[in-house]
Picture 1 (cartoon, rainbow, N blue to C red):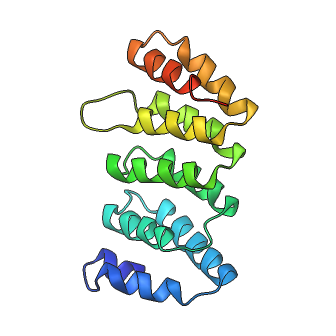
Picture 2 (cartoon, rainbow, N blue to C red; picture 1 turned 90 degrees about the vertical axis):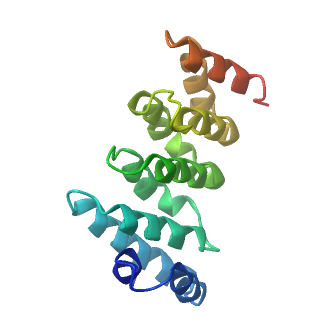
Length: 161
């Protein structure tokens, strides 16, 4: 079904309807399996990844079980930047301290650019996660030689409680 959407044989609304009728456990295992299969393909299919991310956004049960899969997606440089931003937003929503390292690593993988806001969204996520490790990553980023990174990190440290 996700493949049909990715191949434009079905509208995204089909995903929403399909996953809204799944229970929490079925939804997790089906999405997990689909993401793992997608990650094994090379190159990644941009529309398939987009459809999978949309399916995750339809999930009423998004929790820390998805952290590992989302971090694996974040490590894939062939995913479109706006989809990577969405991956960071999902990790920010989940607020799992285990994601702090992969979010911090993403800042190094995707430096500041005029074409995406991945580092900014990563720092927002680290701030919202707020664990000691997440705050430590922000402190380290505040010392970065990259002035844009240092400024962003210092701004987010001002909001940490």
